[in-house]
Image 1 (cartoon, rainbow, N blue to C red):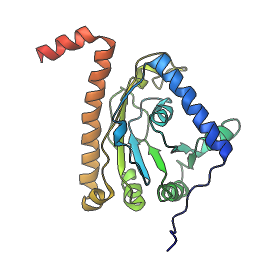
Image 2: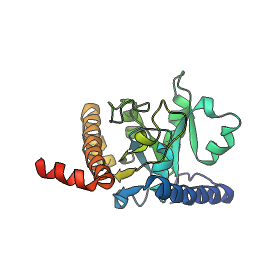
Image 3: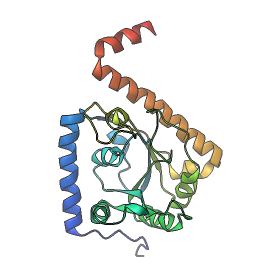
Image 4: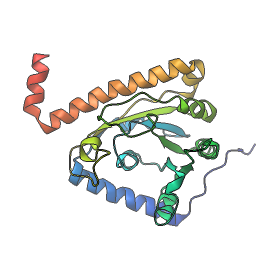
Length: 232
């Protein structure tokens, strides 16, 4: 029996451009930001996934994208879909969301891509952090997670805020560490209440942030980090 699953049709031009940009960004990330990634083995090998990441800067979609071998779709404000950004972000699989409206169009497209075995990146905090820490997750992700019937993959990084805080016009160089966490399966999501799911995701992301923050601190100043660990 043929499958009724629809696969997102991407032209060879788009696929080539995405691969070229990912390779270019990896070179820049390693050179300017000394990016280190742990947990690559936790990416699902088949099917779609809802990727939930903390939000530190404008660099965040690029950081997550260069850590994943598969293409990522991501949500973007509908106001960005105009010249000169429109062609670029469409080539990068952006999904327009009208923040002043119901957001139903964005939700429908997100579910369509998840059911087409895509990885869709969202930032459940809803906005960039003002302090560098992870804020409270918004419950809006719950409907997408349940209706999409795909696993949730938590991704956490530290260093993007220091390189490009929200009040700074342009980015600076720095050190960024990224951690991909173990997925929360679709079956586990179905068994949890909304409060339980949100609490578990928040707990996982906070634990991962502590780990990635410590690893970044150690990379920047290994002597101080070692002394701190011994004192603790």
